[in-house]
Length: 72
Image 1 (tube, rainbow, N blue to C red):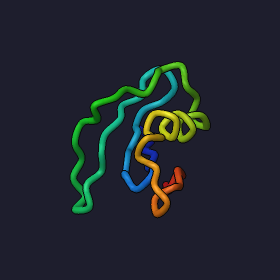
Image 2 (cartoon, rainbow, N blue to C red; image 1 turned 180 degrees about the vertical axis):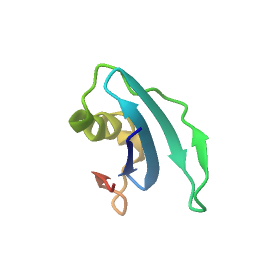
Image 3 (cartoon, one colour; image 1 turned 60 degrees about the horizontal axis):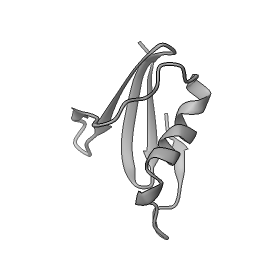
């Protein structure tokens, strides 16, 4: 199962699965994962997830954390 990692305005988020069955979780600094309190719509393609997360968390953007990107 593929795992993607994103840094969305300073928050580390992981997404596993494939189109039709995405699972999201928060990544801790110590390598731990915890269940996310949001869903990634199953109809999104892999290339659309970063933009979706940026839209979802845009309220968390600050001058020092203004970037949403895939890191892995």
